[in-house]
Length: 435
Image 1: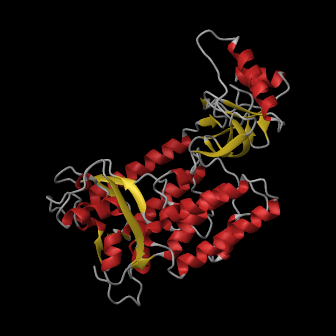
Image 2: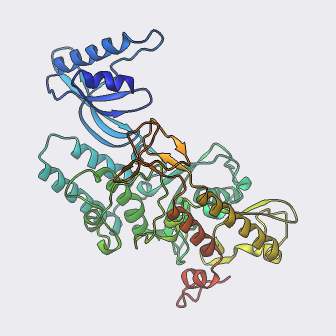
Image 3: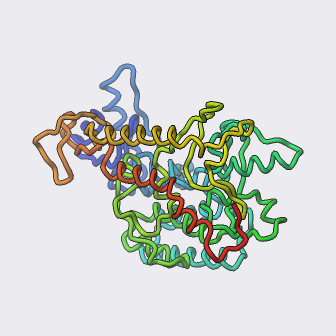
């Protein structure tokens, strides 16, 4: 904060600040002048400290700044002959994480390259539209290589040690791999899987298969809608969010999705606040709507194994069974459905705990460098809420908002709603499903 104030006194604009760095808009395209300016800032800041030193980490030609610790930029590097080269640098974006498939990463990288280019805005939008339409057509007509759909996730423990196997696709696939004999996967191994259509209406996480299964097992096919709507669309939408003229509805149209299932995205503090909203958008699946909710955990009265209960049914493919049919410990034969009173008591206690958390009324400052936490409601107000009395620069917001409480209570109802689950998972026309 002191460095930011010092730089501003030098009549320079600080566009971003983090724990140990700041970004300055130099308003100059002369590389030599920019480096001189950077060294001047460095010299002035370092005069103030004996045990702390700041340095010029890099110069960006163009920058796409999305939110805290999330940006894409073209880094300028001098070549020594008076010229320079540029290199793309990514920080914290979805496309650098391995739990997104290569199809989504490739699409995201193309969009970033277009946004950071020197082309006119209309040309950039036109190129993005053309590329997304090509991706949509390629996925639907089956010309996309299968390896582009693989999602990778590491095992943090041995597959059999996970209590919530049914809701973790990589664990489900790891258990299948181990059941085939040969090499056994264990903690630390990375599992690759694809989301398939298998004839059931189970959630995507319960329709995960190894690529080998897709290639050999009849009745399996790539879930093209999942990949376009839940892999490519969110990656591209987040990157394009600051770009005027491109929104989630338009991106869905270009990908060949039903645009009525999407709405234009607005900027929320989604890193700090629950995604669960009152009147949630129609396109959200149950899995997405409740992804941030606390799971219901019930210790087995017989063996004390903690069972994580997050859906009415368990299993995959066409053979499923009620989740309460058996304990997650394979060596325990207890049917949890026989312990209804104990389970009801545990649920009531959990609900009371969440209600108490909401009514405790804690407020937290939105400013990342402040994060003041208080229960005192100040008199000063901004348009967006009460002013934080610690930094006097940002608003306070509820640490546990009513939207989060509402969604949590809806989630508890959802995981015990037998009629809804039967209608969703076992449609009347699907005569082959059994449980």
